[in-house]
Length: 266
Ligand SMILES: NC(=O)c1ccc[n+]([C@@H]2O[C@H](COP(=O)([O-])OP(=O)(O)OC[C@H]3O[C@@H](n4cnc5c(N)ncnc54)[C@H](OP(=O)(O)O)[C@@H]3O)[C@@H](O)[C@H]2O)c1
Image 1 (cartoon, rainbow, N blue to C red):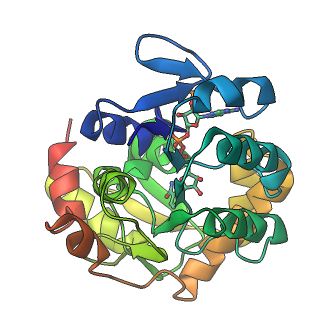
Image 2: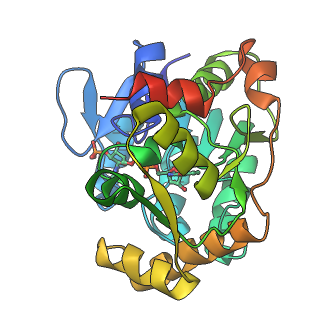
């Protein structure tokens, strides 16, 4: 089955493209093995979808009304003969945002579909993510998450699940994906301190402060506010959850945060 990977150069899409080397990678910057795709340019949809039967769908970024851009994509996908869509959602998705719920519905209406609902990415501790910047620059994990726990998951495990669901027997339903344990920001700070020898602490902030921090990274204010509310919900236990879904789907257990930090000590 020929597969198109939206977000194929991103946090989950990149490892997925390594697992599915025949898949077509969508990117705003086309290149070898890549096809040009831009949510903001619907003219890119049809060429990207030609001959495709399954799509890994990373939604339009930072958008509480994703169907404005995604509805024409679903039309083109159906016309092109796409049968299967695997959507990257989120554990405590923006369910309350009607626009996001609409996207979930559109995915479920495809002949074959699955929705991935992962918890917080371990990769948030790396690279450009605001959490990583605070960690590197000030030894701080800043978050409005209180003592609430997160079932941290490695994006490589999400990719492994997506690869199975895109290419295996017809998938169905929603999959709550977590790593093997749930840890609060304070516990993550302790773990990193123990493994690096460098003092790291959790610096709690309010939901409003968190929203301002996200806004300062360039996220639209409404989206930054909604994202910060999710962090507040984590403080109330919304993501204190561990599931066996990764192992059930891939046949191997997910990576722990301890293993992940060890692998990325440098
Ligand atoms: N971070 C978390 O803890 C977490 C937890 C649960 C769920 N999620 C979900 O994961 C998704 C985002 O993950 P991420 O932040 O790691 O981002 P990401 O997947 O790394 O996103 C960047 C990708 O999006 C593509 N992209 C950006 N703008 C685009 C546009 N206008 N048109 C087409 N493609 C575009 C980029 O492609 P090019 O630059 O190559 O064009 C790149 O492949 C979100 O949907 C979020 O809800 C995240």
